[in-house]
Image (tube, rainbow, N blue to C red; front, side, top):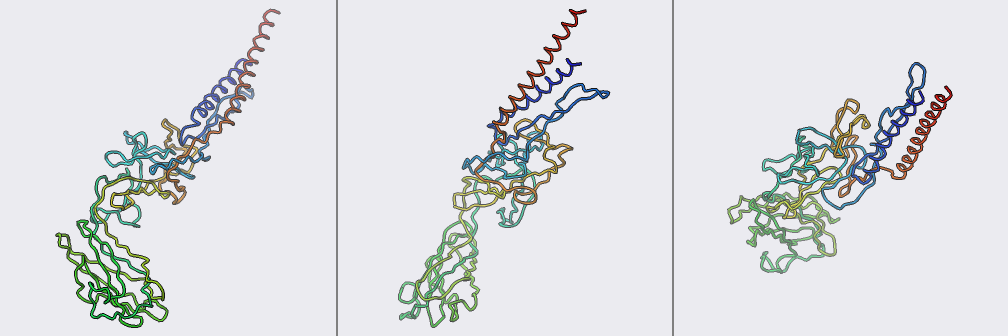
Length: 402
């Protein structure tokens, strides 16, 4: 019996050595989670018959260190959650390795070519992502490659301080070519449906206490008349924000422009004339130049025209029992009956953690602890072999005595 008990001990130690050596070998593997072999006693008919390696536990809940890469398509899960990727066989597996890229067809893929799963962007009638529209359909995450079409400007947000120190111009009537006939001016750049740049120049003329008229020139043309009147109270605030719509017809065959001008926040205080906001919402056509991942999982595409658009969102999968996930090759896991089904959400929502962009999760293997376990396993192995040697000596002595 002692032979069998010692043999079971050696087999259990061998199983533990396999786990320890695998941990040490993967100490430099991104996203790797260390495992531990668990032992249990074996009993038959109330008699101890040895030990067995009964199970293996994974330290999935213990995070690895953050390794900063600075690469836009690298991402690290800061807590709970797994990246979901679909392989060529159509199977969805889960990984903590956030090394992604955009392939030639526009799919977001990991280093093994597996397609990342996520939410598509919600698009408008012109195929452009709608900011703040929420999450689209779930599936293979894809980035539209090539160019994005131009977007004509439809709004102009302008505010600043139109100085209360202005005096009424001595030259009247207003003439855009005579700077003595107006108090100040500001020029904004807008785009038409073809992406061509145009200029809208605002000329401000003080007409009295707390009253300023605005004239609008499109591409240097003479204004047709007063475009808007801005009235300020004794505290230098607008008494009401005027509703201003500028209609213009580009000469290059583009669609007519309808531009809403918003003066919210404009003041009339003493001192310098300042411009705080001068923004339009249009842009020229642009070519995709790169992508990056934000902490909320948003895949942001950058274009040559300076525009950035959220073109999709990476999904994170969480499980009721992460320890029940079944480890497979390529530093990945697959779901099992013990883990439960995957629950998908965007990073930072529900049980899913946020991401760290430009970073990767290092292995959570504690090398010092593994070496200590290795030495302990060696002592256990030697002790069991000593039992075999002693048992052998006893049997030889018994045979000689007989």
